[in-house]
Image (cartoon, rainbow, N blue to C red; front, side):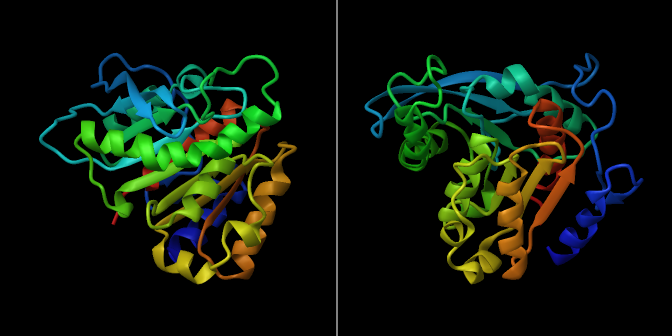
Length: 278
């Protein structure tokens, strides 16, 4: 992993022509455009019982091209931002298109992608004042919903591997903060963690990772990225600084752009290629 960090650190200058372990420094033109002549995965909506919230909740599930119930797949839980819901990635980032194109180029390991609603409350729509304290608290409550309700449902209904090495969590903005909070806070559940433009909900580094030695032993990949023009850069930077000072291997990927899907789609494109590899 040290080699991975060293190689990807080169990408801090995005215009430098470099590649690391077969992964581009930036997504190529057309990476998010539907290609009609390749195999395509499938997007489905699932409904699961949430004991945490006390209601039925929805999530989207992407199954890859060639999906077979006779195989066992790892899972990426992909989280949205404060103004979104389970469809934010679908509408703004088209992850199914990005993944289909990567599969066609044999750039990613076969995986299932689950896109839940990270606002764990009965009325989980992104309406009204999305910054209301009750709605913000619901993003923290989602940790219990994810661990106790959604993951068990996915592992019951889909042919997935159930070990921590086969589970990844990543997200944008508020979801990026959730991914760090939940992923690093539950290293017995997740070995792959990605944060794209983490929001202020991200815990302070000392609370986020009080035992750096545990992270060194258990993490397969910790990815932190942010755009150079993003006003929330400080939250990613302080986490990076803490990890670096404690010798925790990670990728800190700084790229041109602000707080938007141009950045997040590129992050997904790069991050997904590193997942679930030996």
